[in-house]
Length: 451
View 1 (cartoon, one colour):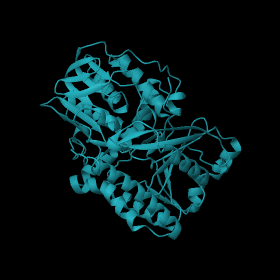
View 2 (cartoon, helix red, strand yellow):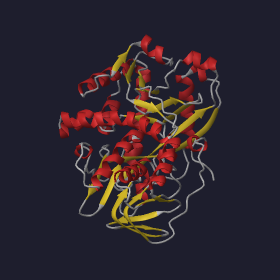
View 3 (cartoon, helix red, strand yellow):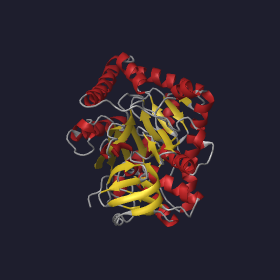
View 4 (cartoon, one colour):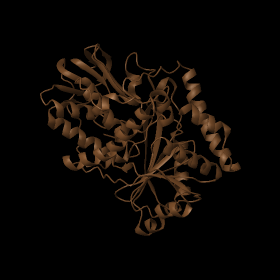
C-alpha cells in the first residue's frame, strides 16, 4: 500500500485495512468518515453512552484524508475572524467559542496522556513572523485585533525577541500566541481509532459511502440503517450525492527534511517546537518534528475542476516553491535533503465559516469546513456533535458555530474561475509587497473576502 504522507509512514501503527462493511446492517448512529471529526464524535458518544451502537464508515483507512496528512498544528485558530463572529453573534458568544478552542488544545494533550497515545504533543505556541514593512504593518494590526477579541496573551515580539525563539531570515518582528501544540497527526488519529474501536464502535474501512439520507447510508457494499446519520467528510464531501457544492476541496502541500544535526538546531533555536508561519497572503506553515525534521507546507496548488480530489498535475511547481521557501526561511537547513513530499485537500465552505449541527427531525448531522484548522476544531466539533445527537444542552451546544448554514459554492466553471483567480491574486500580492514594502490593496481586499 502506497502511503499518502510522511506522518502515516512513520506513525508506527499497523495500517492493514480493517474489514469492509459485510452487507446491510443496523445501528443507532452511522458516521461517514474516519478522520478526527468522525472518530472524536464516536468517542464522545460511547463515552457518554457505552451501550450505543455506533458504526463508522471509511472509504480508505482511518486517517487517510486530512487527519493523516496535515501540518500537525493542534491550535485554537478559527477560519472566520473573531470580529465577524462577534458582529453576527455578539462579543460574548465569540469569546466563548474562542475559549472553548483554547481549552480544547490542552484537552487533546490530556487525552493523549490518559489514553496512552503518543502523538508527540508539544505545546510551544505559534510564532507568526513579519518579514518586511508590509508584513509588520499587517502583523501589528492582527495583534491589536486579536487582543480586542479576547486574545489577552497574544503578544508582539520585537526582532530580538522573535530571534530568541527561532532564527528566521529577514525577520522584523513576530506575533506570538501560546494556544497551539505541534503533534504527529497520524499518530493522533490512529490512536483515536484504536480507542474508539476498544469502546465498542464498529469501524468498516475500504467502504465507499455513495449517499446519505434520512435513516440510512448507502454504500457500495450495503446499506447502513441508523437513527442518526452524521457526515464527517470535510474536503471529500464532493463525492457524496447532492453535496458536491457544499465545500470546495483546496489542496495544501507539504515537504519534510531529513533530521537536522544538532549544529543546525543550535543555529535555528526553535527549542520549544513552536509552530511557525508568517504574514504572507499565500499561507505557509511549519513545525519542528519530534525527530528533528522541519516540516513545511503551504497553499497554492491548483484547484481541480469540478472539485476533484485526485491527480497530481501542477504539484511539482508548488513543491519546488515550498522547498525554496524552506531554504529561504531557514538558512541553517539550506543543505538539508528533502526526503518527503505529500499533499491533501481541506474543506472550505463558501463563507469560510466552520460549522457543526444536527437536525433532530431528520436525524442527520454534520461537522467540518475547518479551512485547514481542523486538528483542534474537529476535537471540539466531535464533542459538540455527540452532545447534539444525545439531546444534551451543554456549553458546547450553545456555541455560535452550532447549526450555522453556509450557502453552496457556485456551479462550474464559476467555481473554478473564482478559486483559481483568488489563489493567483494572493501570490501576486505577496510578490508586490516583497518588491515595494507596502501592503497590497489586492491582498487587503482578499483578506476581507476570505475572512
